[in-house]
Length: 198
Length: 252
Image 1 (cartoon, rainbow over the protein chains, first blue to last red):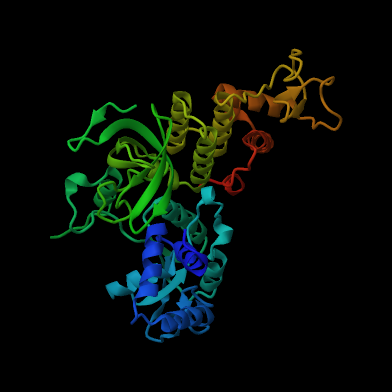
Image 2: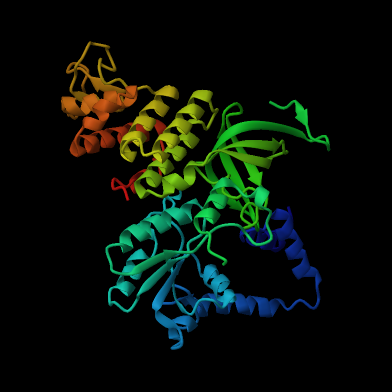
């Protein structure tokens, strides 16, 4: 245990995700010992980010304005909506440069064991976006884990009542992996989603 | 139950396990809580499991049954290998009602094995998940039957025939969850709720696994029985089950 403010700093850093007590101590001493470290700039950025960054009123993505850059971009296809769990997933899909539609960020996945049900996600807002008939296809891109699959099942059941094409991202063998190590579920999905090459 | 060592001298053990839940750890790892056949409840680290090219793939997702090999760690054990024995997860999540029911089952298993697990609890949970994945019965019936039986194995067996307090031979029509099931008119506290004979019959069928009787019950009877089972489970587990309010009675 350190005295006073140093321990306070270690404790606060230790509350960040993925930072254990040892890492918190290392970062704290880096801040204390490195002359060139611009602490004032870090503090300013942390304050500004909390003040300026909010969630897009349309899709729930992070934004510095009322709506995010993707929702404001007139070149994006408004007939396509890709539903993701977190804003981090938007960045991952944008890196592919394959998708030119809009997004909808749910804010998580249905997980009853964690007390998260459909009402805790922005599903109602999604249904409101689909009500005007502009959207022709909803691509469900929730994580390929249990909660993500259950959320996709729930959404697809809900969306079948609307006359909109509902698709799910393909899942199968990862590029660079060995077939012999693939589990039955992944390999089974790869067979289901196989495509013709000739 | 150590006794084996790997080539670096680290103690290893192997067991069959059903995955109850997972928690994210660091960049790409997870802490996996499992109910094992021989070692009770085990919390272990699955390294790199969140990476898309992980060797574990879907084998360590909740509701999956796997043959696992673990290193004994100082605080948490480390999963080194996993082979699927029952891929129930994907079949269960294809039906939203089954998913919510299975979530309550694994949360209950996690709670009733807090002090120590047992082979009976393991087999009961695996059987219930298998039944859900095969759509053998309505998910809520499977769930209610599982809850009553898991609580029975844990030492809180309900009675739906003779009086839970004085053992007077039934049938009785008052149910008091705090007393452990049906009670006679003499033992029933003032204001104890009266329950119709059909609902009590369904509750008895769920404990015994009398599926023809259970399947024949109407939706309203099933709903009343579910309310009593939920109250019974919440009372004996002391803290409420977080997943229980999310149970969906509709199947997709």
